[in-house]
Every structure is written in C-alpha cells, then in structure tokens.
Length: 112
Length: 113
Image (cartoon, rainbow over all chains, first blue to last red; front, side, top):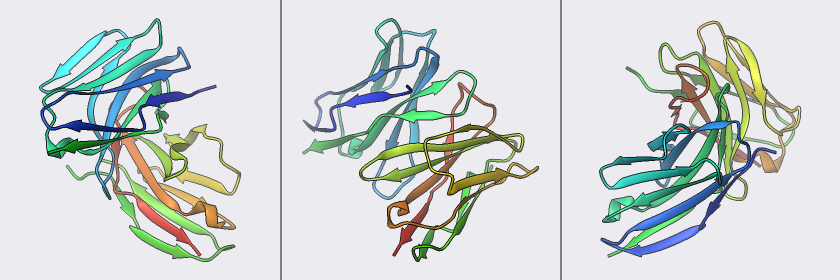
C-alpha cells in the first residue's frame, strides 16, 4: 500500500552542524516529494520539494536528494541554526492526485 | 492573495455529537484535501476534492465525510463523535491536482469530551 517511512524520529545536533533526515516510499507512482516544516502550534509549511525527474535540488542551506530506483529521498540541512528547530515531514504525492502521504515526522532540536 | 482559511480555529464537542469544519482555499485553487493530525498517528490523509467531486478517500470510517462547493470551498463533517476524533484537522489547497505545492490552513483544533 501507500506508505512513507521516515527516520530518525528525533534528531539533536549542535548548532552549525549538519542534519540529515531520510525517507523511503513504497508506491512507484509517486512523482513529487515535498518536505514540510512544522513549528509548534503552526501549520506545515513547504520548505523544499523535488520531482521524480530530478536527482538533487538545493536552496541555500537546504538540499534534497532522490534515488528513484531505491525509492529513497533525503533532506540535508547544513550550518544549522536555532530557528531550524521544528518537526520535519517528508511526503510523497501521487501523479494524478492531491493526496499527500506523509512520513511520521522528525523532531529536530538544535543545541546551542 | 489570502491564504487558506479554516474555521473555526478551536472547537469542543461532546461524544456522540456531530461537527462541521470549513475550509476556504486560496483564490483560484480548485483542489482541496483534508488531513487529521494526532500525536500518535501523525498526519493522515482524509479525502481530496476537486471540481466538487471527491477524488480520493483515506482509511477513515464513514462517519467522516466532506463536500466541495462550486466556489471550491470545502466542508468536512464528522458524525457521532468519539474521543479518538480529538485532533488538529488541516486542509490544504492546490491550484491543480498532483505534483504541485499544497498550501495548508492553520487548522481546526477539535476536542471531544
């Protein structure tokens, strides 16, 4: 069935270090992979996305990689800052639907 | 351009009651999807509407239903509320279906007592 697995569930890194979150999806019909950041008490907000015809995308300190063969995708945050502390969700979207299948989330904490 | 608006923001209901939540998408967006967020189950897909038709439905009981109006506004209804229905209900709108950015509303926090 449709499933997205996300690891780790919690991640604590020193300010300035890098953070990596990994996801695996099950359905090969997925062709769009957004990442959302949700701060406490707020709505999920898109931070970066990648489509299945692209292997890597970067936006300042954030990058996402996609291995379509292995059905893996990852989020990389470099030079982490206190404001990066939040819950991050990976997701997979099916080509003909606005149906987002979310991973279980990663709570990222940045230690000063 | 106004964002996605959900009303009400907070709601307290008693077991057995029913509730209706509203979502107004971004102007021009025709696709609206609904999600339930709980600490234990994370973010789960409820259903998707496009052009007033339900296009997809998640694994929720029939007590959960929805509809979309001609102006793309959507409502979801939960009947015979259970304690386990307590959650944050989020809707998202997209300009088209599929591989495009979804914008989320602030959600409706439903508490069932």
